[in-house]
Length: 62
Image (cartoon, rainbow, N blue to C red; front, side, top):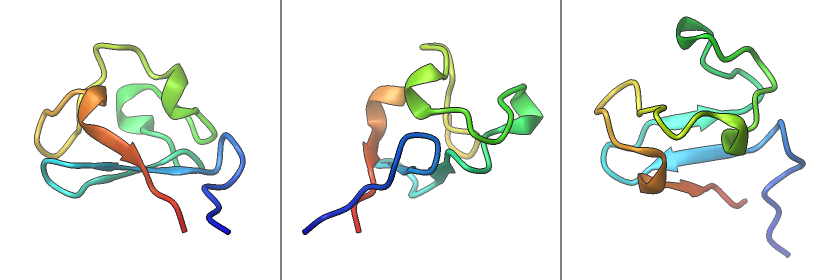
């Protein structure tokens, strides 16, 4: 059975560059503390490595 983990502890991968947004870590450098769910990031949030938009991320499933 696949498991993506509970909200706040999931990982999302950028399909453009492979960067992983870890909800447990957040993106503190851009004002999003640990535990920030991917869905709660603003639509304007971009991949910190390549600039891709949220639509270019997929949920990582174990």
